[in-house]
Length: 113
Length: 112
Picture 1: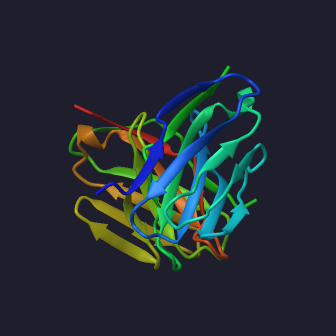
Picture 2: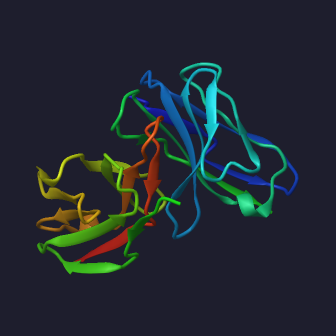
């Protein structure tokens, strides 16, 4: 029962480098989300997707890109890493339909130095 | 800006006591409300959801919703040290995509 799987768990980047955070879910959920969580703060929505080929911006999208070519995968791309992007990143998914809860992956802890 | 407000705590309660966690929200159109538990260094875990005014009970947990006053609360009865965590209140946004707005969380400490 894998649920939502995120890789890598930890990563250190240098300023200006790029990387992709991977997210996969095996629950056949149409909706997927990317959040960041800074210390002592709640989760902020970066991007979300309501199905393959459909993505939209959340509250804090600047500096990130996403794609959704299949139902299962929803990668998050950082093109030019900046220290302000040091955070813990969570991917989540939910079934289609209103009032559905979101289920979270274990997170990726990213440090940019 | 739709907001969800929580007291950051820490809220300290003795073992066996009732812990009461509160959350207020600004969007009157919100229809769904969730409580997540987050242990330090871990991901949020869903523990309760509520959609209608009143109380909803699940084991030691009771969620309470008052849409007129725009608040939702979580009661934890017979608190245990294993309940020590940060509790995040999340409110469903109107519109598509089941988007949620999260509060900053309340840290609960259950003391022996």
